[in-house]
Length: 267
Length: 330
Image (tube, rainbow over all chains, first blue to last red; front, side):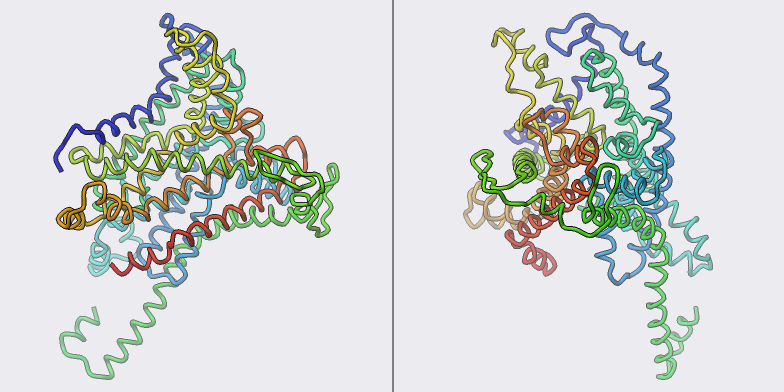
């Protein structure tokens, strides 16, 4: 079909504006010299960013979120890769219900997952709430995502490559490290980055499961409640947006490169 | 290696039978090995998903007395949610003859808000998916990445942006005053069910595009040409060919938006105000301030049950099974 400037093309461009404009207001107003996010804009200022840089409690929260995010990314990608290999390489009886159950966290409201984990942690095992619990909750959310990403990657390349390696005398473990893993690597990196951003941005589970140590979204939430802290909230929000956008772009480029067919499972 | 030699020499019947049992054994071993590989993930999900949900469900049959939990089995919590009463409470023209109508009302309200958001999302997403599938030729990957980015960035911030836009001292109000359209801020923009629907629709629209796009992309273009050749006008062609063939994607999108938004917590809390409260808030209050975990657990179970039933009903109503069979036959 030829490229035409018709209604649909304008709709496409308008849609992108609709999708991005609300979020782009955050950086716009973060440089505005006013405690309200209102038009007309006043002077340009970096004072909110200056305040951010001086906030030690915030730095603690950022650090917590990074540590939890990295652990969650590594753990959920490992479990996701194992499951994705099992699903794509073997004929498993009863695969549907098993995979369906693993995918459940994608459709159960996180508030229900949150209270369920809270009941288990506090009232069944009587463990103190901590960042470990937050991490466990985030692993629960991220394993289905990792698995989906890795399944579509593993389905995308030729299985004969693995069989060839085995015929040439490699054992299972070496086949994995020298053939499967390098081929799956873009998917693995994409899964790591996606799990990291999911964990880094997640609020509801963290709200239920964190103890004294805050993660960044919890800190951000506490700031959202105070209108007088709006400028610094906007500056923090803009910084988070920029950081996660960079991570997401890298992960998306890696994920889509080399996957020939677009599958619905790839989201 | 052994099998290759057997093949090249031409197998005797005995050897062939032995090879077949070997293959049978291998196949059996094959799924055992597959499940061994899967075991860690299954165990992890048992610990993090099944066990918590089971203990939540178990709790819904217990009773909270102050800080003590009475572990005798009772259906009392479920009865609390549906106990009838002679006094009828009306909400939006719907009668609720219940002792505690607040729970039923908040569930119905959540379902309606989610439904509204889902319809809005489909109306916005479908033309965009159509555009991506039929108009975008170059830089397709770039377009796909552009619409996927917001999907992965902070949900909290996307919702907060709408609070800034719709607020009393917000972007729309200050902008309109600045332009001289209005004198004083409009108060109906924020803190009501409509602001929840707008925010949810914007936050979830990116999720809905991809399934629709995939099913549009799969449509055999020769079918469209055939429709044109047989005299269908573009609009008829869309109704007769494109729309029916893209229904699987539309159904997937509907579920992907409707199911999670029913229990959303962040959006109603930030932009809902007192009238925009949804069931996620009620569950949180029951576990928090009200300190009645068992009742909260019962409410969670009921919400999940209702959503599951509605989804089954929906799939049955649109003939999803027939659709799957047709796709398998193609």
